[in-house]
Image (cartoon, rainbow, N blue to C red; front, side):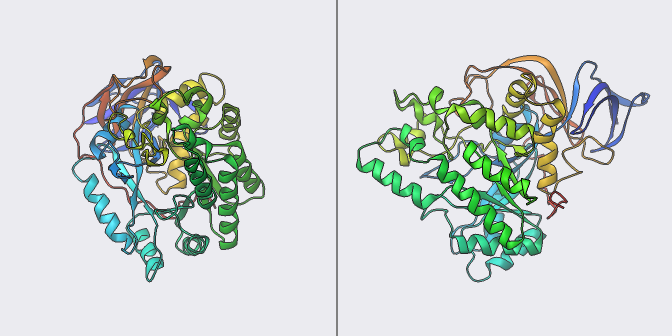
Length: 463
């Protein structure tokens, strides 16, 4: 039986208009006013916005890190994402040094199999380009892995040198994939970190104080310079500061295909408000890049408004405070880096962006759904409500009030970075490929229903 969603206000990245949406099977067949009900299941969306399902292109589910593993797996993490209005995510598979990338892809496929509640894709974290590594990249592109992540931070763990970065960029210039950069000067930061430890500065606050914004800005600048030399686009993940943003803006002003995302934590949390250095509770806010001074926040919002930043993702990488964050109670370098957020992204950006006048509703849709789909090779299958697209539809109640709390959230973690935040605007119903999977905050689908997405390299985003 077909699905007909009537009387809603359809929101795209370009415009908002009243229309009905007819869904047959998993696909949108019509978007227009006045579709007559036949033998359809009818949903009355009068007074509601109809949004394309959110796309979070930066999550870390079931990820080993720092002697432990992120607390959300592909079942709990994708379920929480769905409840928040996200119907697609792109997670990170990690190549172990000395192994082929395909082995990592197989491992992460198994992690998701039978668990994912929404559709998903993978980026590949590159740690080793020895021997046939460049050909490995081409093989993964054929498997639908259209993006690769490299680290300029975490020496002796994930960090690669400039030669490796440059080789990878030159390869993606040929195969059409996209390099995602964790841009921090890890070598300089390591010197600062070791000095802090030698001085007995071991509290969580020193995680933030040993990672200056200039270390981020320098690495962003270097990433873009290497990409320019290679003739390739580059995407900066989790950009956190005005210093780093200035580098992206300058590159884009010169016409370079430089893209960047930021995250709700950098838009809404600050070192002043959330890390008072009074207790180990500050460890809840240890992630990388770290919290910044509040003065960076309006600059990042302006970056989103003016398309210097294209995407809001979450970098969802949760570790429970009670047993996992405690691993670093005597040494901030041993605190697992990461925080939870996949469930609350749309709520937070809608409330603090749209409701406050920082973003239009159309720009909101662009940064949480349409731009991620375009940049990462999913458009127009995902990220838009249009004929032929997957029927990933969020019925959004702009007047619904919601209090964010660890007591009620669905992420498998014992705290919320946004505890006590009150937001207006929330998903009333969430459809994934035409199936109603969330209604009024309750997940109705089955784990394992999510499908792997074979993403297209060079999806037209930088042409």
